[in-house]
Length: 374
Image (cartoon, one colour):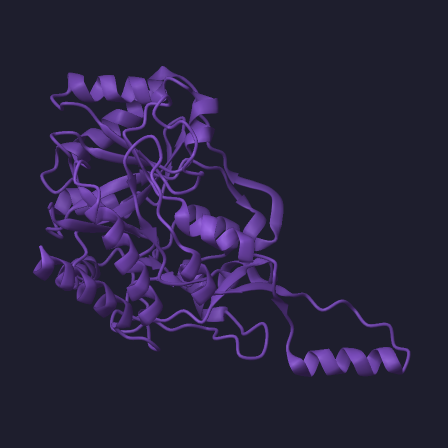
């Protein structure tokens, strides 16, 4: 039995960049949204507060070192850095990865997920504004993209399977429609540069029953969590009790009330109970979510997965491990965690002030149990 290798998505933000300064105001980072979040109904746990690492700045090498050590101590094998290449050489949030490459620190495995989607202001109330458009202009841009990635692929920390760098693509449909030969050309460039190939993985964005094999993918991240979640979305929408009675009184005395915005909220226990990992026509790696509440970023347009707990996360880890036990033919036993530090989406494995190291302890507990049973 191969060792289970948890990989956690990692947002390389939390430092100012000129584009965010322009769009959202000087000094903006995700912490801006996290810090100004408000509870949107009675019992809504916002804002959330970081624990041991505080409101960090990812330009600081010591912070990146602390994150890597913490991840390593609790069984995370590596980070999946989001990578933003929009075409025509346009990048965003590349500083963290560049610093990690150039400094050689932290000594911790990593790979990239190319977040190939257009940035718009839709989640921030600017739905008409395109901030950065994802395009696939020509072969020269493709080559420039590969040449940027090549030093990372060559780094000994970069995650590889049989001398094939692991490269995850967030939106396979978008890429396929924009340039259906992109993967073929990328793989060819990898072979020309001394690798056996690239190991291309599709993200969890799309359903598992599509024909990823014919699109050139070697594996994918399971969509099972979304599949379990979707039937619960929009079943429950809450407003506070106090607001409910205020609305009733206004109605009774003839004051026309303004419709109170509602938040979509689902019970995490029901979703986890329905979670079932299934294969596609390529190796399919389980993906688990410790928590979710993107209202700091999206307000009333957000979605909340309520009643999360380390105990529920432990159940997810258990299900993922059981699924992987039957997949001895897979080249690696990856367990994908979304995410390490998506604070404005309430999607975090890092310690927060409420749960501390609860989620990390849950992961470590099941991994240790599995290794003892091998």
